[in-house]
Length: 497
Image 1 (cartoon, rainbow, N blue to C red):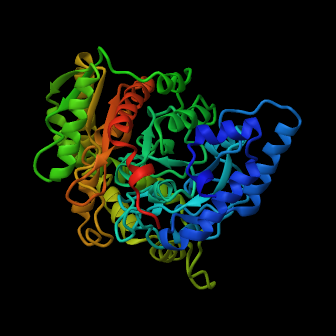
Image 2 (spheres, rainbow, N blue to C red):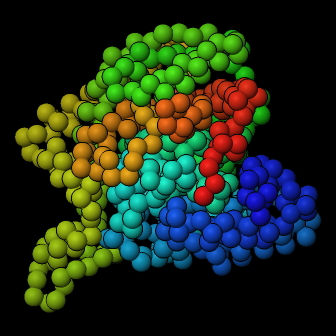
Image 3 (tube, rainbow, N blue to C red):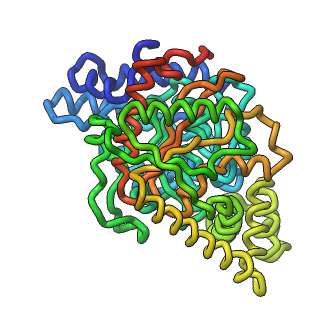
């Protein structure tokens, strides 16, 4: 079992296609791993054992009939509990949807099934994807497999923890302000936010519609690229979906290289609040890029300093609008309906009991920002800052092919350390938010361990919209050079649970 669960997704698929392993063997190995360690990690909210084994048997039957298998056929995956899955609970980490069984699949879910990827179950997350630590889940926090007393990132901490604890070789996350990349950074895994509109949002429970983006999570750059190719592409069911071919991400991951590329380093992504070990590992990564043949270009993007403030007006405003549908009338939790109360009273009571503190905080903030007399001063001004940030990126990409930075200012912090300080929590997304505001593609991959605490550090790569292949080209080159020199931090140095 240990050998199976430590295989890459690409290698697992090869072994299944050749008959060296069956999809059922692979699925059973990962289900056994979940049973052995998830009580401690709490990566999963729901494990669909019967459904996963049925999918695996179908893959084995296809192979037995001589049918050609896809590049990830039979490979297990952990799905963030924000994507609707027919017949399987989807809670979004909230009590307000506890026990809800969707009658349909999200487009991402359907594409995974069509590609014969085996869905193991649904992973824990900050409620409605609002958070940077997975502490805001109504079902309890997830632990970081490197140190179970620390956070695995958020909002997609369940997906990243499932990868780092070898409960699944692949996972799906969503990224509104960094919720794929920040968990990847603090768990030593790879996470990609595709170009906005590159992956369908149909069936993905909305938080902030102009920012939300689903994407792949894995332990290697190639595995992420293979998963990216499965879930990406135009979807007529999503009005924001880009009607264009999927960038050649797998080809780029197989042919990594940075020779002759111009790589930008933004001066706003360092300074006060950055952990010394994070900066050290980032500086080493920049030197590595130089050695691999890249030209390093210093960039000044002054509007990036305003990104955090703009984000925390735009995202809550959109969440205030999106979460209005949870009204106790149509689906989900209903509290206080004893026949004596009005619909308004039942809605208020239900929302009061069904939403957690962070969701309430953001709904209140967003409702205020959108209210009469304040719309232009707050939401309108934040959108103007968003335009300035987009313009800064446009100018930067006239000079460079990609931008690199630390993914997060610090390594994983202890569970509970920032729970009473929302501003300190929000600073975890300092480096990731600008890419969401501009709609660019971005990746986080491991670049070593911080010397002061031995915890993973992430390197962020940002590429222009619809140039997602550049992430994989640069990421694969850095990963290969890193592994050759220092080994893979997760595969070789992660502590056993």
